[in-house]
Length: 272
Ligand code: LIP
Image (cartoon, rainbow, N blue to C red; front, side, top):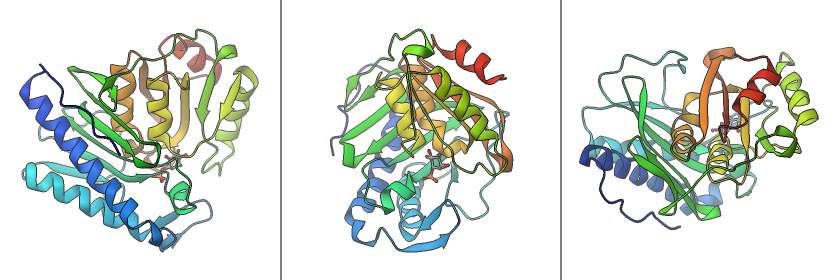
């Protein structure tokens, strides 16, 4: 797994935060890799999801890195007991909040697929300041900060210039379609786009929009920890990534594109 080259020039505070994101996400990802032989050990199994022992362990590993470096900061993680649900309104968080998804694409990981990652972002006063998405099995480490470009393995990345959904690859999901609404969105996208892909790790879907491998991303039931870091990566790569409203259970309706496709995608889905 490569780590990005140190960035030159930006404000020290942001660089320190970004270093913290990379360190925490890398530590979580390494723990998952080192313990891959236990990838099937579950704490809970739902109809469409699993919670692994490693989800919780990797969360603790990431938290430890953050607590050592930033003792006064808050932590919001997928595996945190009693974690607050995602908020569509930016929190009035004067204290920086670290937002962790220790294993995004948990089901993929537990089945031995390579499409999974660890994601860490830091947000203050409603704005994500820095974020890192580390995908060891793909050898990809995405980073961005509010005053730094999006990078993959230390190299600047840029969104695609596709300007019609008819020419686009759109990443999306059919997860948690209990009320059928995600199917409606899926059908609309599949009808319009050149190809629709369900890969199972939202943070990677977004990072792949950021580097032009995909052109757009949409989910109607997604948590803030799935999109916080990677949404910043998309924006700093020249794209658009934004919450379009609240989904069920504190989740978000979220869309991201290369920017050129945002209007067409939101209009197609009748959002916001
Ligand atoms: C998963 C996402 C995936 C989404 C699932 C789930 P997890 O995250 O990344 O793309 O469709 O609903 O939230 O649970 O593996 O961290």
